[in-house]
Image (cartoon, rainbow, N blue to C red; front, side):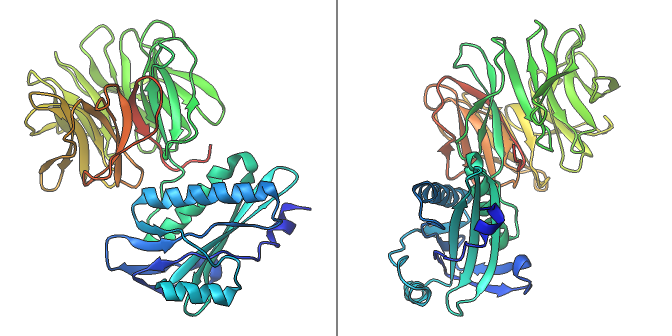
Length: 437
């Protein structure tokens, strides 16, 4: 039986609910329905019932449970929702289920059904219903290889976030980082939720400072593979490593411009380490900074018109901003030794690391108000902040546990979570956009 035929069998629904908000249907085309929601609190209450399977096979029941858990975890990590998962009425008819959710105070319900094929495909159909009118608000189906079942669930959860908030979810994003569990520093990636850990290099060499390309197709990083700190790009689509810049001396701390046409990095070339703009082939287009100082850690603004970077031209590392042409250099005043600035996706803030007499902490610099806010207050060093693609979270490395590990924090300083229990020490995270790799 074909996958399309099986998708037509996805008729039985399971129900979940959302509390304490009102919704208005802005478009009546079934595949383009959007919700305008007003919550009484900061989060929407949403119930997610166990997903059903079409054939009731052991395999389908297993994946129904797994994908349900992935979607629930995604919605929880988004911090947009309070999630209700109890559903004692799944065996009842549709009207009885609606009555149950009404009695519970729910306004809408989310349902999911799973189908698999003998050719190794899996499909998920998601539906959202109005409990009171019993009408379908929107529905959508997703499919992929069974091995990619988590990706399918992530796609569905991103759609739920978008329908409720108008913002894109981040469940398909990944985090690249360096780990030394093999006694060498190798490059790894992991899904944003701490699953699907993958080791990308097996060089038995020193690899440092990974940085995603804006498209998510490549990761820039510096490696001593040929006994010089050269800049490489790992093409994740073609599974190919490319030498970008191999000038004698440092080729490090690289960042793509938002349109990926240029790369800004630190080159020493036998001199003081300064910032240079190169093209994707490694040709030097412009020397951006000069002088007898160290300039490093560049980060482009989202519109590509400015760059924030670190320089010790005052005798200790401070943050500076310049135009992407290299002009109009000015310091962002702070009160400590700064490092690792990262421009927010919305362009309004810069996350950075600062040491004020003791350990390094995470801070936010508000570009409109010039206010500096501290995010972390724990023991150990908290360093290398990177933004989630929606600008609501920051990943960073921290030694609070006694070794360097990757953590995620909300930009209001709350909800700190360890990304995953990964052996060894993990450093310098970089957060991708939503990608399907």
